[in-house]
Image 1 (tube, rainbow, N blue to C red):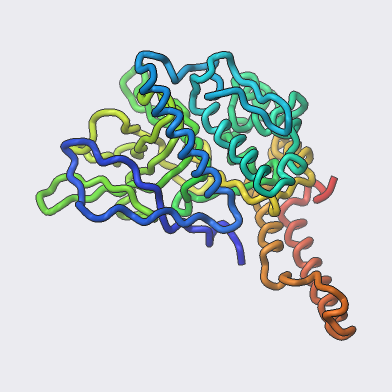
Image 2: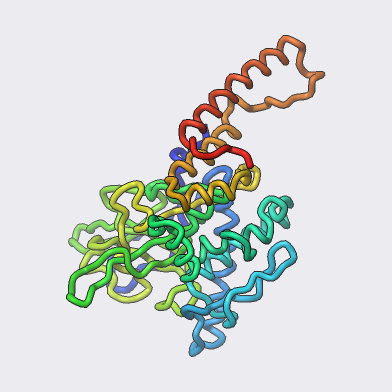
Length: 382
């Protein structure tokens, strides 16, 4: 059965060599990524590769220019979606983390639309970037005005964490536990920072990024720190992850390493592009510390009832209950029990047709009962 528990990635993209002074293993580079089934992660990473080159070329052409800006950055170029302009700021080609990740998302959707069609029909311009209600752009880009609007509507607004909420509420994706993350997942995280009194405070300085792999910290025979990208999660050695985004220290689009608070070896890596003191989630639902979102292929999008899901969430419904509804729909779509349910009548005799109809009726009843037990406060369909 297809669930997010089984979508464990088996590969990760390789980054540049580790900084001078940090020991390396000398082992061959890890294999290329193996992307989760029924996701758009491969397309996301293809877009990341394109944007990585854009960042390199911009800095090479004018090293003195500012390619990272807050708060009014734009995209690397004017973007369009479904024939309409997607605007953000006035400083092309300068970006910041949220605009860079949203640009990658728009580019991914346009890529899939060009390849197979149907994307713009299922997720319209108004859904993505319109001015009515809470468009998906607002959840992904976390503008201050949007935060204020959500905060006024719900005392639980701090649980609003970015792409993870947006993907679930719009029925296009899933929340992923950190050990199951894969290249091409969208991430929102926060850091520990030092307060005015010198104490460390968590849940500060958020960052929007695209996950590219795990990081391990070990010691070699000489006792030196060895930091290596890894294709899979290891609880005993994991110290963080690698990511792509627009970053201040890299002056725009580039890759970085993120170390969880107190997990960076003292003798390893002291200069950028290393991101220190990232807040590690303390539990599965600590989404404000670190949330990971994965977008499905369009055939799995659960676009019905988006407005009801948003209303339910703002009113206090758990994002996990709403996510589970979407996941059940995905499970059902790829559950082998439903495979070939629709076949030409000429290929089945009356007994087979009756047996299939009876089986599907039972499965449908079980599915609806499971959904009803999770989300009793609103109907499945608008």
